[in-house]
Length: 161
Length: 161
Image (cartoon, rainbow over all chains, first blue to last red; front, side, top):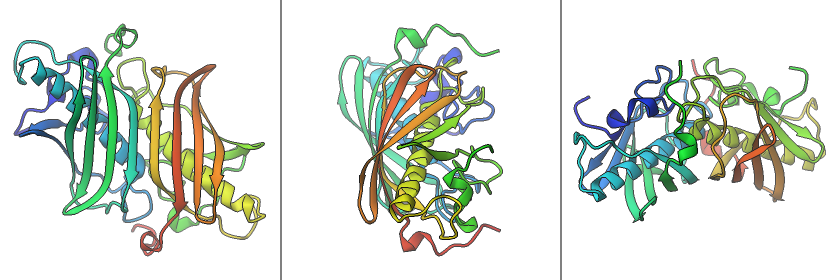
């Protein structure tokens, strides 16, 4: 917890995501931050997160890209509006419209994974994030994600009880 | 276990996948079968598998499509070679080259999810699977996946110890 991640600031009712919600005790707790002009999410898979022994499960990689991309989109909208994490204005919550993952090489299970994102497009309600997943110095996967602000139909629920 | 799924027949050393490996005690245990000319994977998400309260996590949906697609590719190669599940010939193990998920509507958390796949292309080493995810009678997501037979570089490991 030596840095501020966007997920630390999602409104509590919307911080239950299995991938990145700080309130979800069963989840992965992915955390995404700015690293200068790029976004960064680092994650250490567990030994159970394998595809074939020795390699990371593709579904986990897709999950990591998913939350990294929604988090990057929130960061981008927030910065575009002139805010920085820690401001009182609520951080916007985004959802994924599409996620395209190219698995370039088998991802070794062991190293901490680094996902590095670039804001390729930003509009009023839509962001395109292009990201790479690295295991040490090996580029293992690439993702293009389209994110939108969460629609009103998803925001009617409060926290689960 | 009232039907035969392709994952039941993956060679033991390659049945550890977090998504669909029968040997992985922490995983989802997705199971994929033929349903006439389509492939089918059904899954009941847990209450923790949420994105925003009330809706299924997109990373879980991507995971479900991932294993459904690799399983569908294995089924397709096996049938193409004239085999049916239960034959002595080992079932081929496939991996994902690319996965494109379009999230069409928020997926409600509650109903059992049904993923229905179609073999759109099949070659000697490559299969394209196009799938839909349904929650009851609502089409929530669509996926196009490209699968290939697992490369030799991934098959050197034996089961984890």
